[in-house]
Length: 81
Image (cartoon, rainbow, N blue to C red; front, side, top):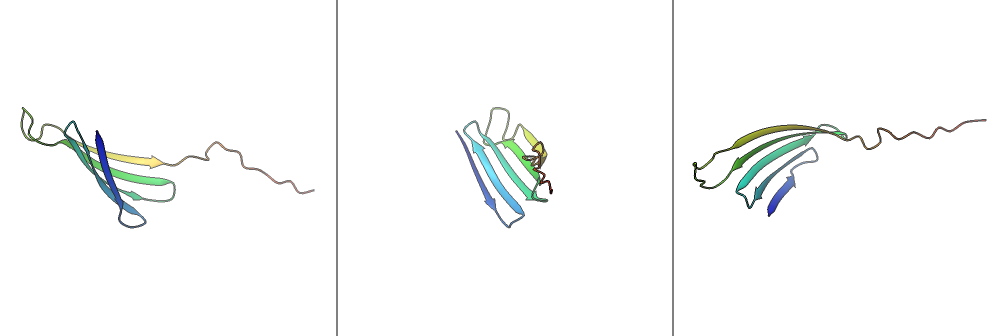
């Protein structure tokens, strides 16, 4: 079971947290650079007491997301007579 909570703080910034039943947790934040570009940072770790200690895995992730939904569509050209 996974649970994620994201909240938009302003029109350009969002933050959130995630937790799964396998004791993985993450904090994430991102920004909308433009209408097509988003930048995100996430920090993921193992929460709770495991057999090897309180935290045994920590991952930093930076993502750059590009929206390309109309990249391969042809634009209709109007011809004037």
